[in-house]
Structures are given as C-alpha cells and as structure tokens.
Length: 241
Image (cartoon, rainbow, N blue to C red; front, side):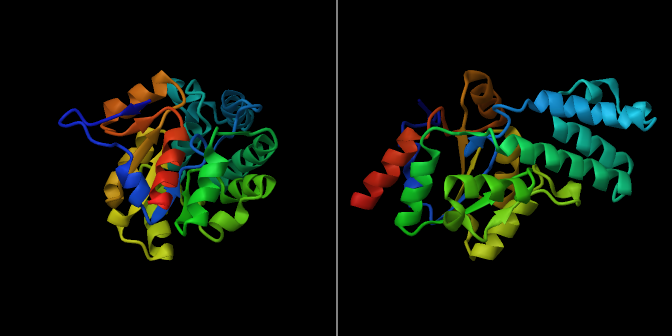
C-alpha cells in the first residue's frame, strides 16, 4: 500500500527511483532488531539497573513506564549530560542491542532492494539512533557490509545528536558529498521524518503496521509504504528505462 499526497494523484515513489544517495534508518526499515529480544524488557532492565544504584527518582513515572530504551537513555542524559553514568548506561544498551542483533528479523525485500540500488550505482548510508557497532554486526551477518561501508552513522555518547536532531543525516550527506535534494531518507518513526525535514532530505515512510503508519501520517509524512516491494519494483523499472 502507498499513501499519496491529498492535493494531486502522483506516483509517490518517483523520487525514490531518482535518488542518488539513500539513507536508511536501521531498526524498522532494514530489520526488526528486537524481533527476538524484547525492547520493552531492555528498557525495564535499564530502569532496574538505575534503581539498583539508588537512582529511582532520576526518572519520571512516564519515563520508567515508557518501554523504550532510548527514552530512558535520553532522560538520564538530560539530567546528567556527558557523565560516567550516561556512558555506562549507553554501553549497557549497546550490549543489549548486540545480543538482539543475533535474532534480528530482516525486513521483507530490504536485502534485494539494497543489492539492487548498489548494483545500479546508488550510494547507501545508514543514519540511526542505534549503535554503529550493532549495525555493522547485522550487516556482516547478511553479507551487506560492502553495500554501505564506510557510511554507517549511529549513536555516540553525544546523545543530544540523536534523531530528531539531523546530525547523523548531515554526517551522511557530507561524507557522501550528496546534496540534500538528491538524497532519500527511509524511516519508520516521526523522529526520522523530522530529522530528514531538518536536513532538507525527501522522506519515504515505512510502516509495518497501521499504528506506525498513522503515526507517520499524523506527523506529516506524505509518502508511506507498508512493504518495500513496490520500492524495489520502482528501482528495477528505473534501471530498465
């Protein structure tokens, strides 16, 4: 399924076929990182670890119950920026992500889409809030490192640069020498959309279910797909033209 702009019926994937550089978010468009290793449990473990250090009051109730590891990490960084506590918490999250990578589930059609874009000369990069160590491990397991290397831009201990800040997207653009309008960002969250817009990069939303699709549309995404298959077909059609 594709979602088009309401103003006029256009091919919502035409910018996809023209992109010279494609920036991928990692967890979602490329794979389900926590398919076999619950992100909710990871968030709970981080909260428990903080409480074990006597830091129960560091998080609000909403943050403790968010079930999102990045919410916990951001909250601690806001209150103790650039601290040893943040560094240790970030490393604990990275180790959990590394464990999750072993059971990550590839997003349908992502691998052939990556290989097809590479074959036709499109440059690829990853711009993610996950650890770049995790991304590289996953790419190695799929034989896709050469399609992206060296352009993997992920979480550092400078957590203020996490999306929706466009920092990782701007790094990818600078490293590939791409003009924003010649690139395309594939993401599955409103923060991906906001970061892409801030960097001036066209955005393609990927939503594996209606809930995620609604979040993207409510945030203003005008092109959303629930499968990468039509994207793959658009790229193949462009290559044959």
